[in-house]
Length: 165
Image (cartoon, rainbow, N blue to C red; front, top):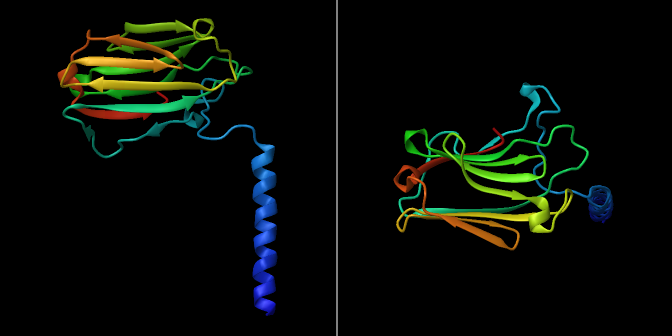
């Protein structure tokens, strides 16, 4: 009986602590340190540390993202998809412009927050769909969709994906 009461008390304490922690944080998910810290303390997330993902017909990736207004430098690389032959697709933030570039700066998309009806500290849905088979790239930012066929799709059948630079 005493053991049961201890377990119940422990559960109540854990519930209280988790509720307090969750209510005191207004952000969830992965938070990145960028230019405001020294390079060794910057955040990065490599989804393919040992070997590339293989997507012979293509893939899609989506997430929600928010940017903090009080950051000294307005980010940089959000993520990079690197295919064979070092071809890459980069998602970047420069000021209030969201950019998607292809291999060494060829611009696929340049969209200002105002065009999306957003500002900092608001969540934005991002999705990228790479259809290798039909040679089509689609990028969704919030409610807007952008498409292109101006990349070398065969380079993206095997990819490395990293968040941060």
